[in-house]
Length: 419
Image (cartoon, rainbow, N blue to C red; front, side, top):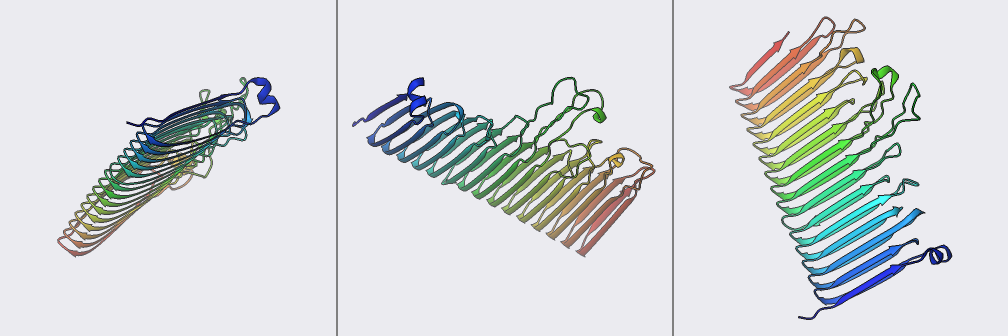
C-alpha cells in the first residue's frame, strides 16, 4: 500500500507575525491513506488542501487573537474522506468539497464578534455523507449541499455580545436524509444596577430542502433575550426574529420546527413555512412568544400536520396559521393560545381536498380583558369524501368566537364547540 503523509506546521512567532502578519499554506496529495495536518497561528491565516485517493484525512487548525481573517479550503476526491477544520480568534471563512464514498466533514468556527463574521460552506457528493458545523461568536452563515444516500447534516449556531443574525441553508437529495439545525442568538444585559436591562438577539433564519425517501428535518430556533427582576415592566426583553422554511419531496418525510424568543410590546414575531410532497408526510410546528405566522402545504397520501402557537403577556401577540392538504387520509391539527391582555387574537384556516380528511382546531384566550374584544376566528374548508371537521373555541367576557365550516362532497361530519 502506497502511503503519502504530509505534515505542515506553520507556527509563526510573535515577532514574525507582527512583521509579516500573514500565514499561508498549500498541500496537495495523491495516493492512498493520505494525511494532511496544518496548524497556523499569529497571522492572517490562509490554507488550502487538495487530496485525491483513498482514506484521505485533512486537519486544519487556525488561530488569530484579534480581528483578523482566517480562511481555509479543503478539496477531497475518493473514498472514506475526512476533513476537520477548526478556526478561532478571527473572522473565519471555510469551504469543504468532498466527492466519493463515506465522506465526513467537521467544521468549528469561533469568531471575535467584531466585525462578527463566520462563514462556512460544505458540499458533499456520494454515499454515506456526513457534515457537522459549529459556529459561535460571529453573525454565523452556513450552507450544506449533499447528494447521495444516507446523508446527515448537523448545524449548530450561536452568537453573543448582544447577539443577532444566524443563517443556515441545507439541501439534501437521496435516501435516508437527516438534517438538524440549531440556532441561538443569545443577548447580554446592560451594566448591573440599571433599572432597565437591555437584551438584544433576534434574526435566526434557516432554509432546508430535501428530495428523496425517508427524509427528516429538525429546526430549532431561539432568538433568546431574557429578563431580570420580578416584573416584565422593569426588565429588558428582546429577541424573536425567527424564520424557517422547509421543503420536502419524497416518501415518509418528517419535519419538526420549533421557534421561541421574547420581545416586549413589539410587533416582529415567528414565521415558518413547511411544504411537503409525497406519501406519509409529517409536519410539526411549535411557535412561542412572537406574532406567530405559520403555513403548511401537504400534497400526497396520509399527510399529518400539527401546529401549536402560543403568546404570553410580553408580546403584542397575534397568531395566524394556515394548513392546506390535498390527497387522501390527511389530518390537520391546530392549537392556538393568545393573551387578550396583550392584544392577542387567534386566526386559523384549514383547507383539505381529497378523501377521508380530518381537521381539528382548538383556540383559547386564557385571560379576560376589558380593553377590547379579542376574537377567536376559525375557518375549515373540506372538499371530497368522508371528511370530518372539529372546532373547539374557549372565550371569556371579552373574547368572541367565530367559526366557519364549509364541506363539499358526501359523508361529511362537522362538529363545533364554543363556550
